[in-house]
Length: 305
Image 1 (tube, one colour):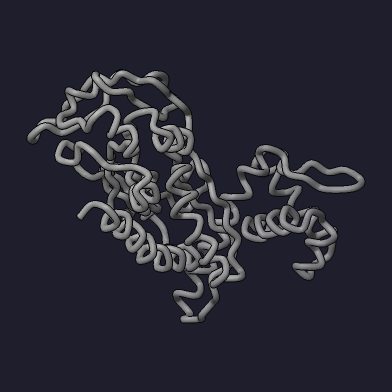
Image 2: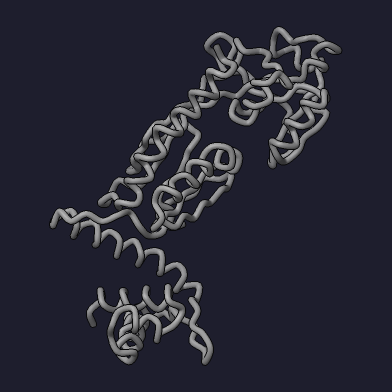
């Protein structure tokens, strides 16, 4: 069995949704396509396709295997072009992941501009508030907001974010502005989390990180909900600088306890460093890094200086 031809046949069938269409695309007989896929399934000991009289679909094993096969074929094409010096426009599927809030506010607009600039690219945007394992979940690139551990991943820094405390001018006029985190217990607090009711917030007093008790009046599961409550005057809110930027810029919220904020958290784009960088991924990194850097600088200069 020619493994490359069998994988190419399987990918063609999966993309075309049928054996006949795949045979036409590859320019080979239908029987040849069917035989190559059957041989691949036999060799793997797994059924990749669900066949019926009307359509062909992927099994769960087939869905997982398809992503890996597409990467293998893309890597092979990139390697061939690197050797021959041929030029190819970036094309194919690119999978990206980012935290929900940051992805919606900053990464998605850049991704939409990228799609407009590269019409042969298809994007899969996974916005989730968890650490996505790139290889296991077939994701090409992740935006990480964290101090990164040493790993085989390549990291491209694009800036940082801050954790800020803010409240509406109306709330501060009624209750006063706290001068130290220990005064939080005398104020109403708002938090957004999926982990349960927070009992304290983190600050830096001198060079030492410390946590201070909060009298939480409202805990919600989304940043938008928490920001709306803060703007309505319910209390103090600790949130990310990029979530609060618009409200801080136009004065709907006021930043307090600035001198006690934790150190800024780095923001990076990370991707696998153990293989030839696909042209589609290289194009996105080159496109996104300066734009993300500019956006994060704008967040800081809007109200930090």
